[in-house]
Length: 267
Image (tube, rainbow, N blue to C red; front, side, top):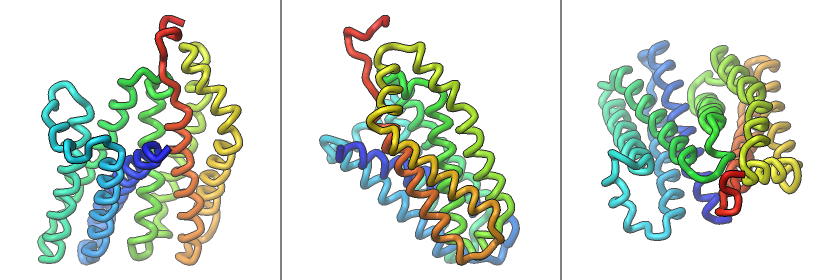
């Protein structure tokens, strides 16, 4: 249970930072005079908390540096490399922003590295013996979370962030995409191994109510954000609805993943 939450913290913090950095790059292109110094500190803090979560997940945290030595064959090594590179780039961005020398292209580079780190995470899970994670839907799950948390981070930390019209379209498009692809995902699990069918049973049974609550929170947050007028006073409750919904979704992702056992192979 503790390991599940450690992974929730790690994956979502990196995703939030990657998504947030994209909106920082867009904001810098719109307003070259806006200071992002404090915002980059928040981004660095998010990545730091995420990496701490990843260390808590490891059985031997001190051995973590050795995991980077298999870049040619291991997505875990690539994930660590890109996460560390992302953190270093954010530190460089913060330092240059303090000197008023930060170029927008460096923010975009940081964002791309952050997104590659998120993609590396998806490949780790898609390479496991868990049918619920082997699907392309894992990529959708992780990048929709990146989009949602990126918007949340931007509207809480950027001046006038709540009223950005592009945020509404990003949120609405991301959530509608995931909902539209959900039947295909369940169909994939339904015709897969017994482990995949067991994941469906968990989603519909033990964690069914929690899954409904998750989607009610996310859809409510998106609806409030899209329909309501752009008032900064609304940003905190919208952010809470979306964040709690995404956190519950990632928790459900981990606890409903059932491993294929010897008896399930070929079923």
